Amino acid sequence: MNIEELIAQGVDLMLLGMGMVFFILSLLIFILKGVSALIHKYAPHVEPPISVPQSVSTPDKPVTDPELLTAISIAIHRYRSNS
Image 1: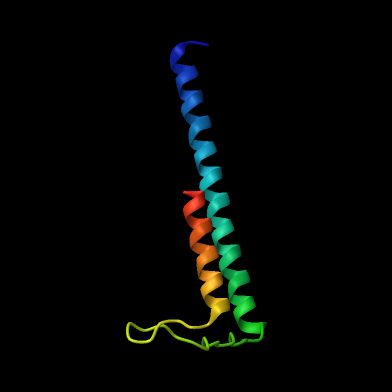
Image 2: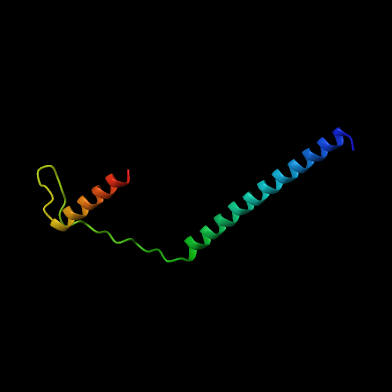
């Protein structure tokens, strides 16, 4: 085999491999879109519960709930200790 045949064979294999990857990824996209459409069609729609906090903080009204203050303090402490 001379170099031209080897290069041609390499290019053929490259194009075959790239074509297969493109085909498989395209097939995956169509399958995922189909499954998503089926789920949206047959799955029941559930509204997420809306929870309103008991005490809302505004500039003129600070938060007074001790459990909420404790949770916020712990979250700030953990955030600062991780970074």
